[in-house]
Length: 86
Image (tube, rainbow, N blue to C red; front, side):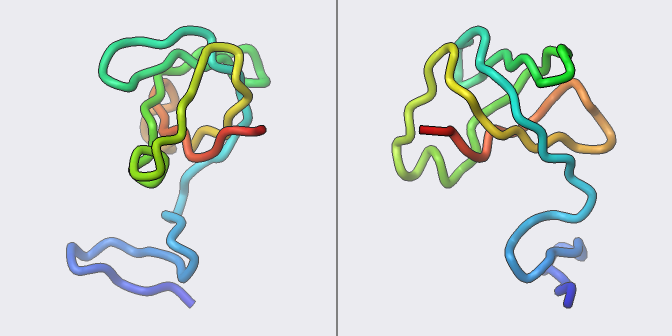
């Protein structure tokens, strides 16, 4: 079941947004302001920032970490890092 948010968007019950694309990648470079260059499995390089939950829990991301990135279907060159593999 899909729920409506206060701002009119749609959110699934588990908190995931509709239409996001989740892909795996490797952090290539750490940039200022918690931004990272991530090389995806298909060899594309995207600019990604850390998700809010990862910031809250002080999860550190270093170059060469394997991560999961959420990409918006509107701009496939930017993303959000939502998980770091151990």
